[in-house]
Amino acid sequence: MSGPGVGFEYPPQEVSWTKRDALLFANSIGATSEELHFLYELDPNFSVFPTYPIILTFKGTTNDVVDFYAAQKAVAIPGVPVFDSTRVVDGQRLLQNFKPLPPTSAGKKFEIRTKVLGVYDKGRPGTVVETQTDLVEASSGDVYTRVISSSFYVAQGNWGGPKGPATVNFPAPKDRKPDVVFEHQTTAETSLLYRLNGDYNPLHAHPEPGKKMGFGGIIIHGLYSWNWAAHGLLQHLGASNPANLKEYQARFASPVRPGDKLVTSAWRTGKKEDGWEEVRFEVKVAGGKVCLSNGRALMKCDDAPKGKL
Image 1: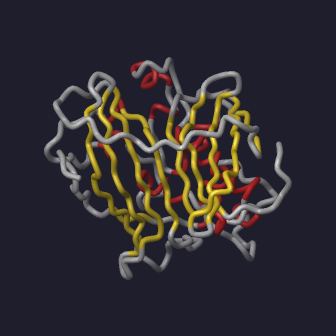
Image 2: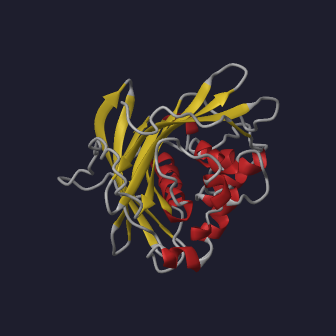
């Protein structure tokens, strides 16, 4: 597909992680003491949680805090307006796993390689920038994960760009009860812990950016809810085995505020794709709106009894 900015490749970004990074990430998204292979570096099956690569574009190689706004403005996409990174939110993320990450990047050079798939003018609401990001081992060219992302630049549309294609939807079944339901009570500290993984957007730490964007104050990272739900699916349907999650996606439908309770409902569809079962899910704020929609995972599910866990 052609269009403004399409095919533009960002400069490769070197990334790295340690076992400590993997431990922090697992802790921050809800891994439990029954999952020591995510939480204890000496466990014989110690593993990086399979959605961890989503954080590497923010973290890079540093173990210190990152100036989020400066990083977002570092490279401009040619042929489109320069968008204000202080008014950007996540639209949707799809992660595909090809190879498991080693417990640490030490001894190898890994790069994030990102290209633009489309820049879509949605009129008054804003602009969507869709990208493909591959985590690549530089020496071999092996791709470990691929992430398809859409970022929504709030109220930054009407510049004459293409509207973009219709999105593919994976609605949650409405004709039967979910096979599993799990929940989590967030706190005022939830996003303050999660941001230490490398996603230092001030929107999730200080009330001022959220007030300017119309959210009324701090909101929790959409990617916190996204990763938390991925952990819950793997825990309840995949025996907490990182090899059992092949593909995972969700759309960010509405904000989550500190103190909200998250409730995930998931349905095993029975549909198979190359031996991987499709699971659909949605995440709601208890008593409120859906915050993650269009949820779909390809998994190897265990045979635990169906029902609320």
